Image 1 (cartoon, rainbow, N blue to C red):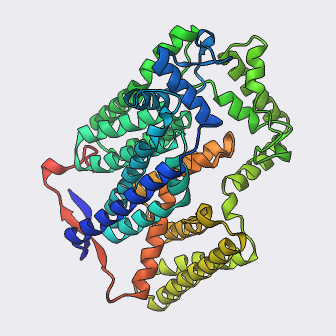
Image 2 (cartoon, one colour):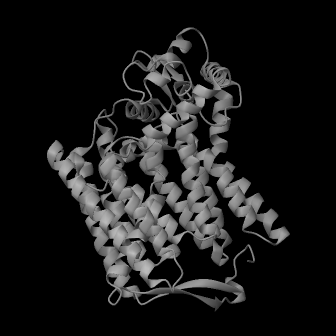
Length: 486
């Protein structure tokens, strides 16, 4: 069967050299920042540290209320994979209160792997130039550079599992059922890392179902999907059944997060800063409720608020969106830059014969980017942010990503998959709490489309020297046809 293949004058050797250079820089930056800027565990990080320490010391997955080993109680508030990951590292490092310091170089290495996976996915979908630009953008993207590798949080591992699953899924189109199983298993592991990973399942299920035309292969795919997605969670289900005498599929943290985003006080504190009743879950435990009962009660309270005040709930969703994308809140000057970039993207989507429109589009995108960079440099200088303000912010990258999506989006299943994965995690921010860390784990989608916009503008600015790409139809040998028999 015929399959589209991206052809380019960008040679494999040239791409490999640039890729190695980007990864070498990533290794230096991430390792250096990870070792120099790694934060002592507080908040969520302190909980992960306590779980990992207890696993190493006495093999129990639980917390201690007073710090003594005798008062450790089993818990299901956190998904198990990241604490197990930390416990393994602590054991290799010899344990101790400062065992978390060994996590810094490991998470730094994971972020280098993530840069490599972003480039691999970008090359497969958009070609080598976009892959290299996406690698540079992901390397210097602020959350990926300063936050994920320097904090004891699950997001760096979660991001690695999602990217690994996505790359294996795209490779599985070549007819490799082993890669397909590995992709589904990686996504299953992502759910065992963060409970909001379960929102990936509908996207993956629908994409896999619609990608298959042959009925027997479709059912075989669904069986493989169910098996590989649930296998990583079976030990967790068994452990919870023994510890709590009931089936707990994910964690007991969902009701708490849902309630924090659906209560009378949320409208006055949408950023969940000081004044938020973070201790309400612990108060319910002290009143004699089990974790499961406290989780159910907080869900019921949140649902009661949403049903009794539907209009306020809708407005709160808008507030959550503003918080989740707070760095893209537009002022007058920003609006000028955004308008130029978006209209430029629309102009670049014109048919090949409309060269004047394409020229105008490239000029608008270039002007919008330059104006935004001037503004960003001015703000950084005025606020004296120094190192903390360095790197690529979501403000510019998000708008470029929107422009790239307009330029490159086709009605192909791969682009729907990228968009669906991104929206599934944004839904977690809007339904529960606007935690920007959730968005960071899928911002690689915006990175890829931002790279598409940058390459599109570069092709307009340097049409003679920039590598040109085209899609051609090639006949696939029968042995390499995908399992979906497209």
